[in-house]
Length: 334
Image (cartoon, rainbow, N blue to C red; front, top):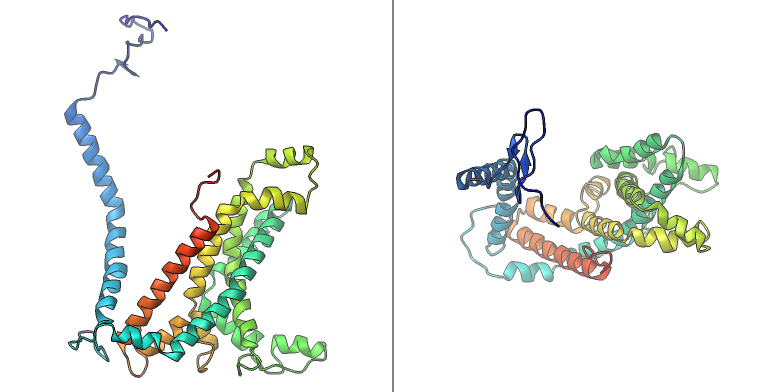
């Protein structure tokens, strides 16, 4: 295509574009000077470090430095001291792997994850579908379901323990059972039968479902409406068919991320177990066991650090397997 030649701008008229060059408010702009480019690059670099520097410094001081110190402690006999001198190599790791209580705490986590992860996923997705479909008071229901996320785990655990599942005849749960003619249950007093799982899983559901509902709700709002219209033209019935063939595949990336976050949150379970089962010697997840080991009477920082690093390694392994299995981070059309 032919290009108009450059003509000088007349008074009261817009400048004519120059061949091959951008047009600025005062006329065609020439190539930027090297000094100007370097000044702009230095400005961008300064802005980058100004905004990310505090975060990187905090990450280094509060995350990577403790991890490195924990790795160093795990190689020493560090009982009641953080500056040990007796090097023991991998003995702390072998001790933790042969510790029956630590292995049982991993089993406790497995049972907790088997209940908490699928139930939280299903409840969050169900709430998101309901809120997405309603035509009135959507903002109210969205806020009402999300509000428990702002509640403290400690406060919620105490409410569950002292009001709802306190084990006495006047507790809320036992009052409801009394209306049905069922005897009162000591929910947190004994592992046989394991009624304490009902208490722990329900408080986790109440605290976390609203947050994951928001993630699903954002993903539902991004599904193109034309997909449902095309499915209706092809004869798909609204309800299960559109949910299975349209909604669920479009939520694949969000679902993978939610499952990953739920698994990590299950590994990090501490507050509800510590407050609900504070005096129990059973039903302890890995973090509670390691907390008592490192900060209890013996204060064995070497064994506690070794157990924490083994747990971190296990979390990384499960995360990689989960991402590999569910395709987290993979392109939708890949």
